[in-house]
Image (cartoon, rainbow, N blue to C red; front, top):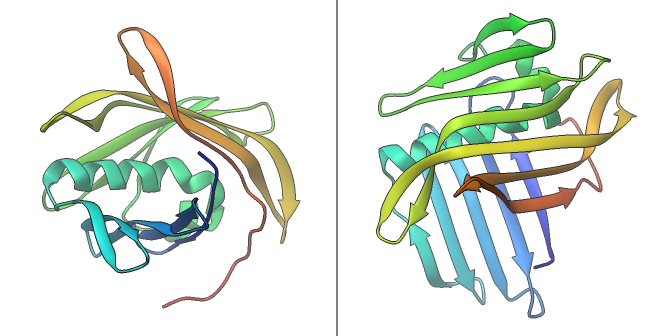
Length: 185
């Protein structure tokens, strides 16, 4: 399904807010966020009629934390400016980064390309809603089409998905159309 979205990723703390609109005529909106450690997911019709949401839980918090970590490729300044990130060097081409909150621990492995840019991400245990419960599944993503913007190399294409029954299921694929660095407190 095609959509357009805007996202704000905070650099000094693990927070983001993603707002999307989709057809028909942009009448369906989605907000996916992590603010002050609290996860939020809402789907609305006509901007006010809530048609789906996910209540805060340790599983939804972990999922949002993993998303923040995975999207560091789009917020390279956070790599150095976010003191809550815990880094480990696994090899010259692989890193691990993790976050802890009061309710969850999240960790991803990052694969680097030959230029040292983030090429891939992997989490062994991203929660996925299946029926009425969450199941932790392998989750992976890839970044490509790097371009230089405001002195930073950024991927302009990406995709993520789960491994289900030994097969990859792409849940999201997108292209970045605009990027800017803004001062937000």
